[in-house]
Image (cartoon, rainbow, N blue to C red):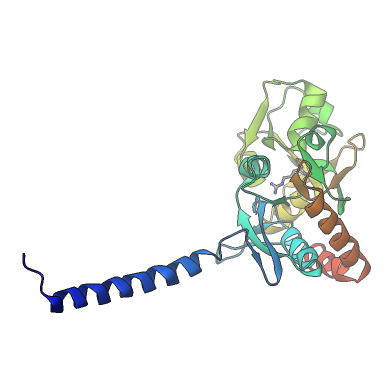
Length: 265
Ligand code: ARG
């Protein structure tokens, strides 16, 4: 093909236009997740939004709840921008380890074992495991009494650990669920006898699902648990900021406001 001077000019104009478009696209690509902006750092918060009132999905599919308001309030005091993602429980833990999640907030109980892999803020909530059972079931008063019964827990949570502590690891009646709601559903349908999970959450599900033929049994021998916000082990910079922010919101009334909103006075 013969290229005359006129066409050359056209080509170079086209070339310049392309350069311009690429330059623009390049600029846009700079504002990625995790980059610092004028307002501070943007961090990814992972949660398991199946745990009301601490975290649940809004009708439009956004995680919301006590923990979500809390982490947003904390971040605001520290000039940190947050993006909250519903990752699910296991993926949140894995994400903290591989760095795809900066902060985990999901009613996570601070345990010795977990402290080996994560660092936690100072506690922000006190909880306890309780037993949920049908009213017509033979009376029990503690987890150890559930021997021989089918018990549902959320896998990888302190509910599971408590059952294992009393009835042994590999207890054949233990059934793990991805979410507490699945365990409650199975109990309602008689596939399992009891559910062991965190007190405030069990109470919330009882209200939401209008479960009136069930009892919440408090095992007085169960230890108190403390919820903390998790970061990757060694991320001291972020942990310090979260602790500072948590102290601030506890002081300035914001924590109480969130508490009353989701847990009543
Ligand atoms: N507190 C319990 C634990 O740390 C259960 C937490 C479950 N949280 C959730 N968002 N599903 O093991």
